[in-house]
Length: 254
Length: 305
Ligand SMILES: Nc1ncnc2c1ncn2[C@@H]1O[C@H](COP(=O)(O)OP(=O)(O)OP(=O)(O)O)[C@@H](O)[C@H]1O
Ligand SMILES: [Mg+2]
Image (tube, rainbow over all chains, first blue to last red):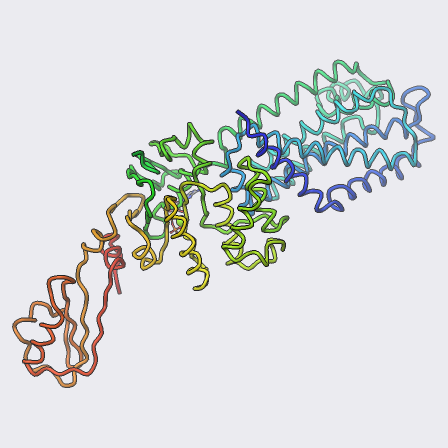
């Protein structure tokens, strides 16, 4: 028996929370994308051609959108849950008849929604630079959901495990940001030396971005089916890990 | 009849520190129960285990016959917890907080009238739509109390609800909680105000260093210390002490004499008569009734200075 109403309320609360500070949670990340586009597309657009017949800006935009989706899904859940932990108001959720799964779904869902909104914002500003074709909208939706889901879960995990803001910042700046920058958002891994190509293939974010880009351009470094299988696997894995941590009550129910 | 709360053999360690050791007691349904103890005794830890915020190393707690671990959904619906620490969500108003909390318990719009009633009863109507950050400490406390009641729990647990609360709120609060108790709610209260516990609780348990050292009706506990103290300020130094009261003297000097009298067995009238007939005159008198405080101090071994 699932407490649907309770889960929905928690989800709505999480969405309302970031909507109350939209400048910080939606506008700023979209402006960041805009800055990237200004710099990279104007500097590189005439010089680099990665897929034949596709300009650099068109190559770049899907990567930037996916990067902002995943970074914001992570930021949303890590900061919201960690702030609740610090303020002590996490108690209200822990006292309620909400299961680990319900809590997990509510938070991850909210992280995905934030990622989605930022992603759409990034897409809209990118139209100023390039109008992208949409090869397959379902692929775009699937990869956004899964990307937001993976990073939303990681955000929850890092919030639960951290004792201070420093820990969250370390996770964000030493894990999430490097992995997203080295994921082939700015280049095709085909231009990398052999060794670095292999290393890139170990980065799950690579598959998120490569598959997502396929949704727009219909071109990718590796098969979209493989990417999908890998990101789905990652999603299941981190979800399982997050549920396990919640179930154990690690640092939440001492 | 199943007890409202049944605590059996609860042990809890934090690292090497034994916070609770083999705690056993029941709270009958409908009782106003006090859980007392000095700082660090383990009261909040026990409440946290009951609420599912902490897990015991050993033992079980049942609320209305349901195990707090196995049947957590049921027990959380039956329990309303007012936590000791102030907690609030700075993103929301008091009314929003209450509606959210009610939603977590699976309730929808049909519960809004009850939320408005709670806001009204706790004197929060004026502040209901202000952000939590703008409320004073005492008001945040009231919101916490309202939050514990949004789902109309059968058992209400109050962990020091009156700490840091002004006299007026304390009065309204107790009136309100007495009414809830009158309607059949079981109340578990922890407090450091012993007069409060003495006046309100039917039954009192005392925790000390993680052990249960007393669990009895309030009257029975009061009888453990059935004495009161009569202080007389003397008009002139004592010449002799009449035999009748010699055994009752706790201390005396030239200006004051203190007598220890049994609440029921000694009559103040006959003591005063004895003093009179011995020509001992005094110009002032007061009676000191230590009550629960004395019992508490003697049981927990704290020194009274
Ligand atoms: N999470 C924790 N980790 C380590 N020690 C803890 C933890 N929680 C409580 N303790 C310790 O357990 C003991 C009991 O704490 P508890 O909060 O239950 O006391 P209390 O009876 O509620 O005290 P007070 O009257 O001050 O509220 C204290 O010594 C406290 O330091
Ligand atoms: Mg306490």
